[in-house]
Image (cartoon, rainbow, N blue to C red; front, side):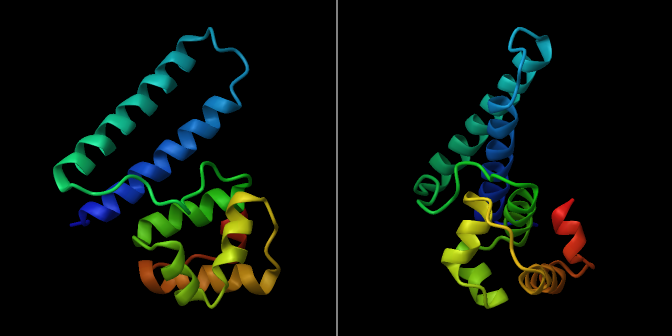
Length: 137
């Protein structure tokens, strides 16, 4: 069973993904847009409810507002699935936290060797095979 912190990480990831989708939405008059807004609001309410129950602080300062690339989204999603902070991801991969944040927030494309490091760390933790090309999908 996931911990409260893991649930919050998952909710924050979902909120970030919905925020990115809404930012890129072209026709805001569509019913689907309103549905997406409602889903984001539901996720935020659920996160706030859990944080209030747990008396936890809000999202960490270094959590990115929204990933800028598919690789960034996948790193963020898998990081949340593992229940890791950015510091823990840096420890598990040997990649500097500053580099990780640039891959997620700034759209800097990791070198193939670095993608392999991410894939190996996530594979070990999640006990399933994750390949470097999957991080780019």
